[in-house]
Length: 128
Length: 206
Image (cartoon, rainbow over all chains, first blue to last red; front, top):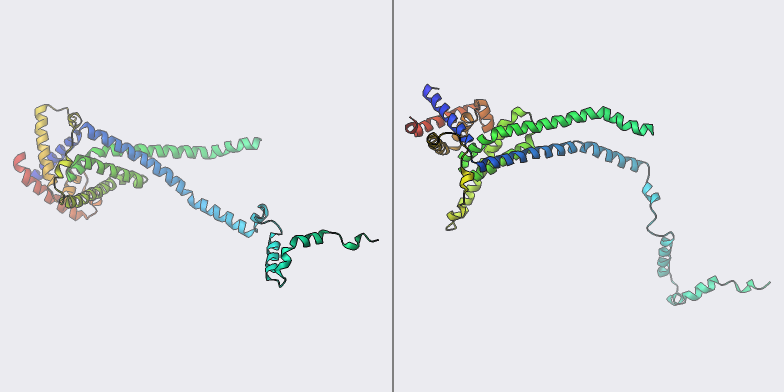
């Protein structure tokens, strides 16, 4: 590079640097705000990265818990009450049998009578 | 009871110093980033302003570049920040220029849009922060305005090579890293930029 070129380069650099020192208050204020926002953003990103670093360990722990639960049976069924009352499935089956049965539907209309008959003591119970 | 009390103490004695060290390291990292950005912000603004020729767009570009650096590369070694930052800045400038080109194409169909972009400038806000005597300041402002106009008129790659080498003081390798091209290309762009500028400013500066 020739001496003229070097001189030109130096003068340009000096002038441009001087230009950066003579910025308006508005520009300097906006730059400062941008810098603070960027530093805050870096802090937030660092915190997020720290949390994400634990994600594989958390996933592994969750997988282990699921595996243990699956291998040691089904404790959930024992802990929670059944959604359907005991015997309900029998009554449903009874209904199905009634519908499928060949008995007359007229008998079903007197169901209360048959209930009473079933509950009443046998007629020869008084005898003796 | 004694076990329940002594266990946290034992854990604190083991993990406490490590946690304090990590916190101090994080604080030092934040301070280093702040120093880096404070050092670079004015030159970055000038770089963007000459490229896009608009103060507000240049400020937005610098802010975006700072945020992107902080978000994605703050954990990288501090020596890598400068070329990375200028690479981001260059991409943001290019995005802005593309957006403008699209907007100009769209607005070309609408009559009377030029008045919409005029804005009121506060003369106090716009006044430069200067300690030079008035005559000298005017002379310098004129020379700077001529240089900035001449640099703004350069092709994009020449402009970047010139600004990075002259204003930022990058060597050829650093400039190549920031521009994403070979060192040979940087030399060519820079050489052409200097010749072109000398041609346009020679009479004015001699």
